[in-house]
Amino acid sequence: MESILKKKSVGSGMVNLLNKFCMQNNIPSPVTHIYDVSENIPFERWLNKISYIDKKYGREGLGLEIAKYVNSSHIGVCAYIAENSETLGDYLNFFTKYTKIWYNYTDKSILSINNNIVISWDLATYYSAGFYIKETIISEELQVAIIYQRISQLLDIKNHIFIKLELSIPQPKNPSIYERYFKCPIAYNMSHTRIYISKDLLEIKNKNADHMLFIILIQYADKILEDMPDGSDFIRLVKIAILKSILNNEATIDTVAENLNLSIRNLQKILKNKNITFQELLKDTRFYLSKKYLLDDEMSVLQIAHSLGYKEQTSFIRAFKLWTGESPNQWKNSHKNISNI
Image (tube, rainbow, N blue to C red; front, side, top):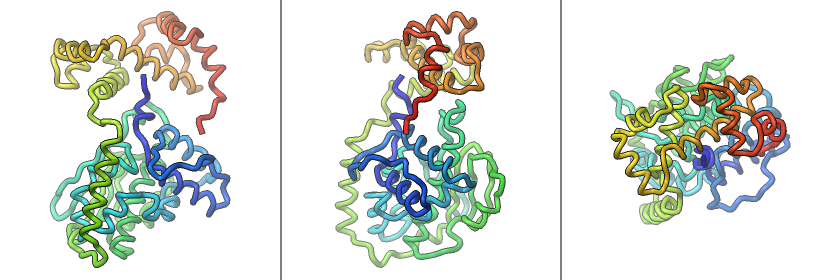
């Protein structure tokens, strides 16, 4: 299976932000490649770089600290669109569309609740599978903190930026760090991340806005989106539905079809037209998960077999040998020391 984490990405400016943080804090940087301004980095590689920095930094609130160094160059065209919007409200009309250019993580939505505008997104599926837990927590807090810092920079304000926060990450050991940073009430362990912003902030005029430049930047951003992988690709959606079904111990075509609001017959027909079968996608997804689980020292081969929906351990071992030519333990021993940084 082509990893969901490899389809998601961050813009090269975000990696440059990590590099800047390391330089300012005397931490050896995991960034060893000079990225082109238009280049995107797979999300898995991004998480590995965060993991490296976290081990060197060793303190809570890493994402908050990294965000303190953010500027327009790290966000790219989306930042320049914001800087040339007449109001923050005008920019938010485009926020959900263009955010994926610099942080293609999960789809975002804008809600209106009482007198607040709410930026909302769900927690990534791979987190529920137990992958990259610490790294995802840092990446989540970093994304929220970047939005906070950018609004502060755009409107030249220091207080009352967020009304309140609902975060999908666990409560930190020292929540006061987060409360002092964001200066608002924070709820943790939510099913989604939600940022509450007063509608009053949306109407503040930007005296430096350039409408002509704004139009040009919008056209440029549209071109970038055209060149990015299609987020609505049907095969990708099926793979995500299969992944969810495996995590819920319901890896059947019936469950997947129901999750996609399709009949089994229609699902099979669409897949046939794309020259692939449900069983092939299920196999690919199991293979992807099995490799991730094998690198987790806390899971035995028997536990992995059961988590992937195999009734017997021998069936999983036989399937894994067909995929790799090695037994699960042989593969684990030869890959556990490989670094993706």
